[in-house]
Image (cartoon, rainbow, N blue to C red; front, top):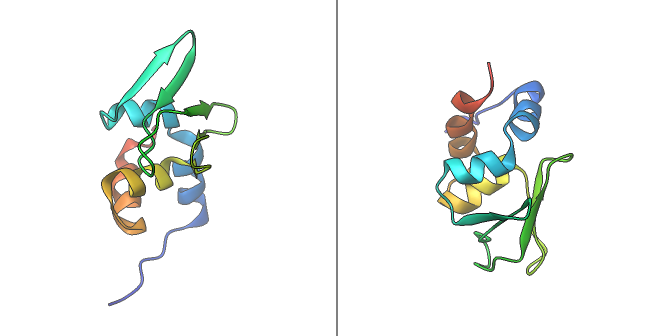
Length: 95
């Protein structure tokens, strides 16, 4: 089976131009916003001790210590591989 290759620019855009908090809500993943703080149920450990740092576009679970960019989150939440996650995210990129 041939390996799928993605350009670095596409992967950079997927990690940085799709807002992680928006993506989590788009996936209808359990989350809440309280007092300006956004938190979500971690797809790895199922705890809600989490936050999204908008300036780095990373989500973090403080319970298990996992960081998620948009690709990582989609992979973990949907139990998909890298290619499936990239193909899912590609049409969500801002035009």
